[in-house]
Amino acid sequence: MEMAIGGAAAAAAGKAGGAAAAGEYWSEALKSFLDHIPVSSVSGAAQSFPSPALELNLDGSVLDAIGSMYRGDVGGAVIVDEVHSTLGKFVDRDIGFVDFPSLVLWALEELDKVRTEREDKSSDFLSSLERHPQIAETKIAWLAKLFLLEPFFPVRSHDTLFHAMLLFSKHQRLNVIPVVESVNSSVDGFVTQNAVIELLLRSSGLEWLDKIADKQLSEFRFVKASKPVSVYSDQPAADAFRVLSKEKTGVAVIDRKTKTLSCEEFVKLKNKNANGSAEHSSASDSHSILSLRSRAQQRAGLSVTNRKSDTLKQAMENLEASGSSCSFIVSEHGLVEGVLTTRDIISVFSPPCMDSRIDGGTFFSAALEQAGCRIENGQMIRNSN
Image (tube, rainbow, N blue to C red; front, side, top):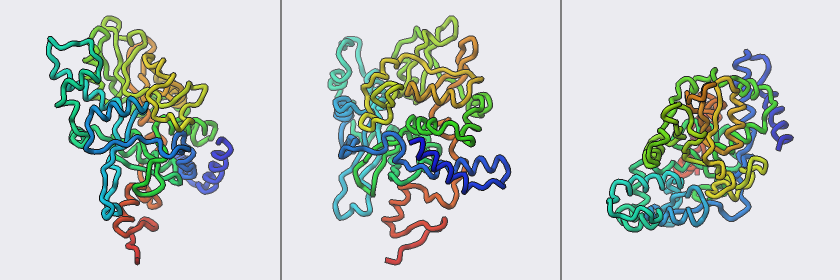
């Protein structure tokens, strides 16, 4: 992998040109470098099995969806709608993506609204859900109104890392990118934000990458603007779940007296979606890229923290090792001052604008193909046939 990336870097450097001004040179070199790494290099993007994706029908119920994901040991599922064969060329079968934590948090909130004092609080989650059919039988399609479904923006294996990073940085609700080979084909794998960071870290040592990654966190605007979300350690867990459901990021558990992280614990929406520890790389096992049960869960209560004086690379290494989606920025006294997410990091390495070489992604390519058009040199052209 390192040799392949090094070769791509050399080609990118040659095309970037050395006569440009320093700032522009690094931006172009980085963009060219990322645009020479295929998506297939990202851990979890390629799958040796027929399809790693669990599919849920749009008219399926919440109870069935949660049960299927739990039994299948997957942290998310592709939402599909059966399309009539005569319309298959014009209608996308894949509608969106739903992750397990978001679905469970929504169900917990709804249960909290309808539970009575006399109801048995010791029963397990699924049993409680079954006793309330108005929640359990809610259709997956209805959840789209609550924006619980992520958009389905796939990439193909020959698309580039630059392409995937643009999708992550430009679409705030996109946390997982499916990998497909053609329109309405089965999903071959997934690109996660943590897997992208893992691949970027493998490129450590390349000068134009290190020039960004070796900067202190205090130099980045998102660290100054971020505001941590927290609950006190003596509050009910239900309060933390409500905040977590609303914010969709890590929630710091603060000691009410010291105002510091309580026993270094926190609640987070996503743990490492992989099977294995940091020593046994993770995301490289594509079969478990969306696994719910992993040894990394043993560390689920430990917070990931950094100081503003740490470098971006140190924060990336912490997130990659833990599999967390966020790191809390703490002061030397342990006070929580901000939060850094995997999306923040990806945005740093993603160019601020798109150029004419980018056609908008597989999602847009598929729409153009169905309309009989294509993109050439930044212009839309209607096919002759």
